[in-house]
Image (cartoon, rainbow, N blue to C red; front, side):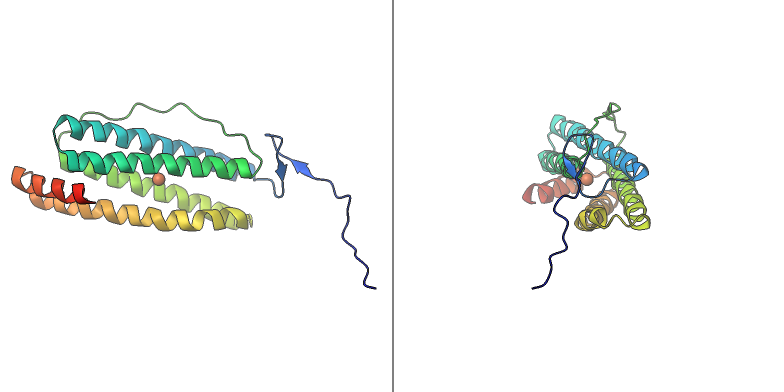
Length: 184
Ligand SMILES: [Fe+2]
């Protein structure tokens, strides 16, 4: 008979939340995860405020686009929070800065949003490389699909920015983009 040499009495590690932890999260990586969670929550309220800005101007296509972006950011935030919980951590929520509510032009607003997406991507890349450096494969696997969809978001905003720039603020062209966004 083959002997079973699995230990039956191995100790289990518990994290700060009291949940069992298979591999503890490195503290530098954890700080970066918290930082990223804050960025996703900020994007959520920033896009919500942009949704209101468009609502006030009767541009309901742009408005609905930003409302769904805002909801998407909240989903990302909960994904990160749930991942930290799954890794035995408690989720600390930090205070958020007030969202920007005044814009000089639609182009300025879309440019700002594009940069916000680019910053989110950089933060994800930073998380990814820290996880890789310390061989936290679980985190790399978690981040893979998120980075893919983040790259798509950048592409979408670049596309909208291209159209808005081309329209040079002409009302008829802005209304066309508005109805294109409504159909999405
Ligand atoms: Fe996001």
